[in-house]
Image (cartoon, rainbow, N blue to C red; front, side, top):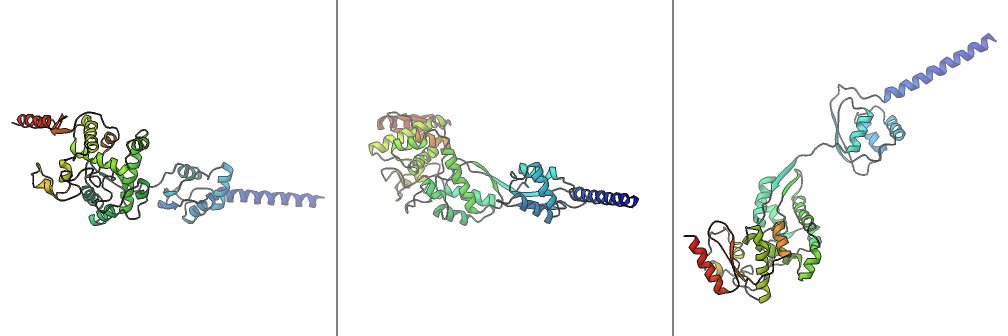
Amino acid sequence: MKSAIRTVLILLVLLLAVAGGGAWYIWNGMQPVSTAGPAVTFTIEKGMGSSEIADLLEKNGIIRKSLFFKGYLKWTKEGSGFKAGTYIAKPGDTYDNLITRLNAGDVVKKETVAFTIPEGFTAKQVVDKLEGAWKIDAAVFLDLVNLGTDLKEIEILGIPNDKEIRHRLEGYLFPETYEILKDSTAQEIVSAMLDQLQSKLDTIPNWQQKLKDRGMSLHELLTVASLVEREVVVDSERPLVAGIIYNRLEKGQKLEIDATVQYLLDKQKERLIYKDLEVDSPYNTYRNVGLPPGPICNPGLAAIEAALSPEDSDYFFYVTKKDGSQAHLFAKTYKEHLANIKKSNQSDQ
């Protein structure tokens, strides 16, 4: 009898020892890796499940046993919200710390490049700006701007491929301050600018219906907006000048806009001469009736809105005041226009 009791006691002791040893083994396996080690960088790819992530953490020495981490995730009902990206695990991170950071997407901040494209910049000016910001040869950007190769936005925005257009993406490179990942390709950079145009257009209520009501394409709208952008400085005058452009188009009158000729020159002139107005180009609105083949710059939102919602008037002419205000004098007839020119010249004296 005593022998049986002794055997039972020995078995109980052994079972407790095994259970205790197992519990200790699990507890130890769930403890953070030594705090003395270096920080570890690891990347969770899109589509990775929690089990794969646990194995990745063990492989990188961030946790001791992936099996225990998987069990902990099931017990806490975590893991389904982990976000892809590159992380840095600090020595001594606990399970809970890791789970919190993976849920929050506390990824390594990648280096970015910030640059600003002013309103009214031409495609060539944009290319020069991009070359300076990214250290990518201007020729790479210029080929992309001229051809639009492999850019999905070409079809989305309906950008035409007309041989008369000087730069295919002129007018579509939205002027804005950008911050883009430093390792981006030229295509990704240009795509971001085209995407921004679409985003800005979508902030205009019913812009597509308004465009349809005017019987215009987006390309024609941006062309008018570019003329407004280059001709007008005072914001309140933009809709009025847009209206004048439409008045001339409807009447079949030449637009005779200096900015279209300036666009053709290698260097902007303070004042055009009659010889400049004779240049043979479809962009020269002194020689050709109607709009030029495409935009002459990249217009901002205010100019686009003005072209979309012009101010109705009986005006057909405008001349810049020479009093430093950069505002205009407006006229209904050519006779009134000549009087305004004289008035403007007198204010310059």
